[in-house]
Structure formats: structure tokens, C-alpha cells
Image (cartoon, rainbow, N blue to C red):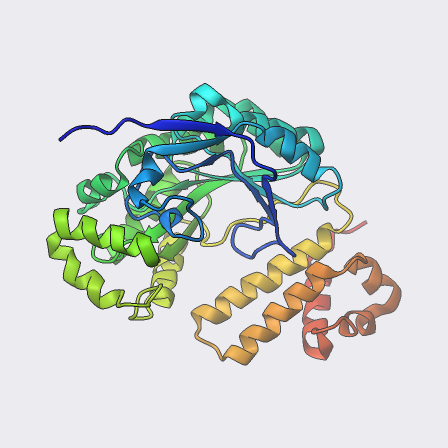
Length: 377
């Protein structure tokens, strides 16, 4: 079998920063900015082959035709000039970063302009920029997560490695995690995507949490596999050709027109992650990066608290109307221009209860949380 050569295509896009109305409740990022399209690692389960993310008609091109956004740092600097301060999902340390160094230059822009960053990575090459990440963390906060779905001592490790194609071994990612943790930067694992029949058993969850805690990580975020359009067809072809014993399972879980698994296993996986993390003293949630001295820091902490409560309610399978109550409350506090602590000090409980989508119940809950977490003068 011949090995296909990788082609790099430098180009100059018009924009690089993706903006959202508010930060998500998963990675806490409001912005994303990526230096490359396509990935040399070529993980065969990667959702980035889906049509809405990929410009390639042939999903095989995703790992072999890499588009390089050569003007990304300049575009990022321009876009952040008048943007509200919130974390940016950025960085990409696939092998070509050694040559083009666009990830580092984008991180330099974030540091220069005081923006927090979140970096999700499969490659220990990120250690090249540990000095810069540490500087960002000291000024405005940084969080790093490694994409790891199984450990070297797991039963299905070898088969997962085959699907991860050219991604560096998990042991090297864990070793890099340990160095990042030693530098004082919050770091953990994104156990994504969890592959049915390979990574979804309790023993694997336990192993990932154990290795994470043992290498200085403080969290494991877990999420299941999604498959859509050309990526689903591509992945089913991989199973058919190399893992035929798994094909029937995936055909049942991902019937036509489905995106996530048809068995509704998302809550089960999330509970396994929480239980495994608890055994090793780490969390199944990521800390929210908040710039030191930020005016609306308390607002963001309140939103973080509401989001954590929402997650707990989802795990407890509570009614949708209760979930929406907390979700809308978190959005309302996130959207406030006024500092919530000042509102509480000047108007008391009635001020909190008057915030849209809070009302008496949640207003009282937030007041109690603020009182319990206020530092004495």
C-alpha cells in the first residue's frame, strides 16, 4: 500500500474569529480561532470530517490536504480589538505547526491582548509553547485539555490507536499533561468521542480517570461519538474494512438520519465519568477561566454555579422544564452588564429576584450562594 503525501495550501482567509452570543457551559469559550483546516493526525472518528466543518468533498482529504491560514494572527488581533473579554478556543499542534508556528503566533496575540485561552490537543508538541501558556495563565488564565479516550493498559488500546492513525501515543500525552500541571496550568482530559464497544465500559472510564489524576490532571470531560453525512459513511467504511466485528453494533446505534447513538446512552456515559472522577478526587467539569480582577467575575462564577447545578439535574434525569429554568437563568446572568454583587449589595434579595428568568426561587438560591462564598473584608 502506498503512503499518500500531505499537501499544505497556504491561503489568506477574510476572517478567523468565530463569535458566539455567550460562553458555552462545557469549555467556557465564547470565541474560537483555528490556524489550520484539516489535520495530519487523521483520527478516523473525528467529527471535523462532517460537511458543516469540512471544505473537502472527499473525507480522505481531511488528513492529507491541510489549509494553512497564514494571516490568522493578524486577523485575530484585529478581531479582538473591540471584543468583550472571554476565553478563546485556539491552538493546533499537529506536526506542521513545527514549520508554520501559527498556533504560537495566535497565542502571542491572546497574551498581548489579555484574553484567556482554552487549548484542546492530541500532541505533546504543545510543550514547545509552555512558556507562553504559563505567561497567559499568569495574566489572564489558560486551560489545557488532552484528547484521550483510552489508556495504554486498557484492553482495546491497540485498536483505538489504529483509529487514531498518526496521533502520538496516549502515554506521551499524559506525560505532557504532567509537565503542564507542574507549570501551574489547569489541565485535564477530554474523553471524546467515547467509542461504543471500545471505550464505553466502566473499566476504561476508571483507567482514564486514574491516569489523569496520576499525571496532575484535575478533570475529565466525557462525551459520546457523533456521526453525520460523509463522516458517517467514511467511518462505516473503516469499520467494514478493518473492524468488521464492530460494524453491526454501530449500524444499530447509528441508523440512517441519526446523529448520536440511538440507545440514548449519553446520560449513562456521563454518570460513569462522574463516578470514576470521584474515585480519584478529580472533577467531570472544567473550571471556568476568569481573568484576575475582571469586573464581572462574580457574574461568571454565578453562571458557573448554575451550569454545574444544571449538569447535576441532567444526570438525575430531572424534568425538561426544570432544566430550562436553570439554563435560562444562567443565560440571564451571563448577559447582565451590571455586576451582580453590586446589585445585591444595593438592592438586596429583591434586586436578584428582579433579574429576568430568575424570580424568587433562583434569586434566593443565588443570594445564599453569594453570601456563602463572599470573602470577609
